[in-house]
Length: 450
Image (cartoon, rainbow, N blue to C red; front, side, top):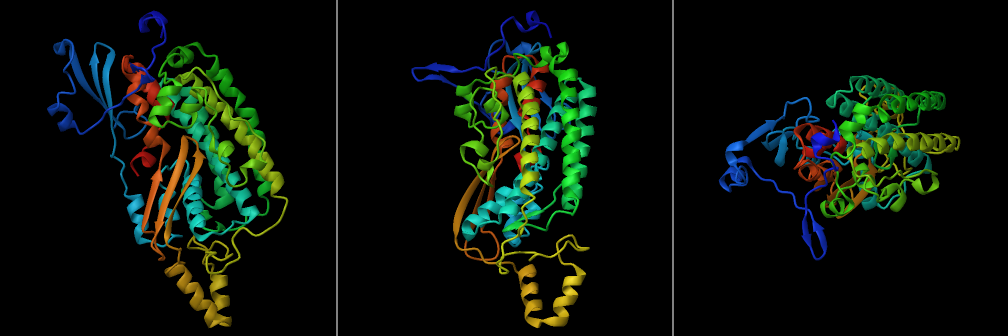
């Protein structure tokens, strides 16, 4: 869209000037409360303003997200997000299952980055148990998380392209994502919601020829990613729809708790893999791409750059896989499914193992039965672990009362927090720019609502 339609200079998020600098505020509330308080339609010539509901079924709201926009002509005067349409009660459900079974719940929260949900949850449990995960399991976790980061960023670029009319970008993004999901299925047995990362390690050893498949994927992605630069990066329409749109400066990010590509697009190289390393990330050589433009175009560029960095990390993880070792803690009171192969039930209770313990040791059978049905005890206490998922800091807070089930589980989903920035990015812009701003945040409503 030409600059003269937007009014020349790129729009900057609104703020209140104070002696401490600009202060950015975002508001919300239930629809009835907002009307009762007169928060909508109370300024200027109200006859010229209308309220528009965009979503939750609208194809440009990036999922089941509802946007309430007060508009004057084509300009958004006020904007609010309405969430909760995909609430599944995942965190509460974890309280009624064993610690290990909770993995199958949390993996479905942010369904585009399941490996991160599993890793954060398991790392919090391991913190309470005060156990150290075997090195090989750490490497496998890093490999799966970086593969998931690539897959998630591809969906971000693809859906953003679809919502802005770049349909070829959408078909290309999902084409590459299929390659990532094929590899994930080969490594773990499932394309999504794998529940492969377990407390104490991972479910099982990787298949014998995994290295060849991983290297083939890396080689294919290294040839495919440059195509996005040819298709989108220099494309005039794409740049006009994203450059100078959805600007959120660094001070706004800091005030609202924004993390991930949105924060790094404002110039701060905050990435928990570097600033607070976990899973051995301090051993990997990679960069944290940043920009100072703080707009939608910068966030697109950063996601493409981060995919290149993830490929670098995957290469280094492959080299580390040459070193053999266990993939689960050796404590049989914790290690579930206790070094078993994945059976027909998908959870590790292979018929061969059951046959063996039933025929050789009643004690082994009793222990296996109690470990699977009851689970292991976790010392009373609470723990928080934060990791860097594709959208920012994903935190998991678990509370134990000493039993075999969580007393409380809470996920700090970055998509939920980042969505606060939508009004600051959108108010004062055109309706079409709201679509670009929301796409650049890349909220996944399964993680937002949980």
